[in-house]
Length: 163
Image (cartoon, rainbow, N blue to C red; front, side, top):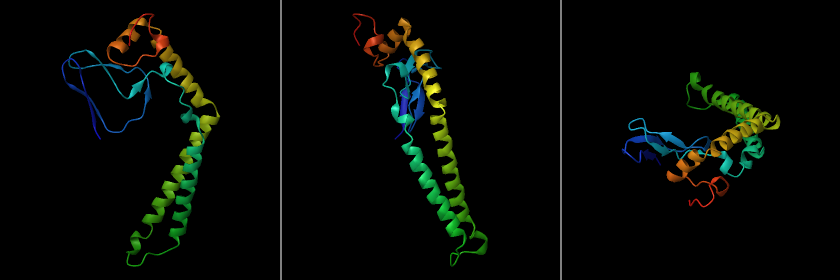
């Protein structure tokens, strides 16, 4: 399903996207047409969100490694077989694709696990959290988020300010 975001002031289409992953950065963007602010629904302030523990789990990477190993095995297994009715020149294609996909999945999952276990991913999230905390300490920025309809967490709102 396509999502279209329009500028609240001039109605210009400013974003079009289908599926998206959450990005931890400022959700305030400016319309190129009229210069007014709008919210990018793909972006969230990390300082106001619960810490994304799911991003530090090894289980998805282990599953991906297993599936990659299966594809690799299947490609090697198929490389010794011949498909009846297929021309000789195309017999290599399917096994090669399985081998490449399997090896790629295994490599990507190993890199992902190293990224988590080495602490590099935690450092990245710490940097993003600190940047978000710095933005959220600016009262003008927090007020603008609230006016645009962003759910500003209680700890960042001024006393007596309504959401």
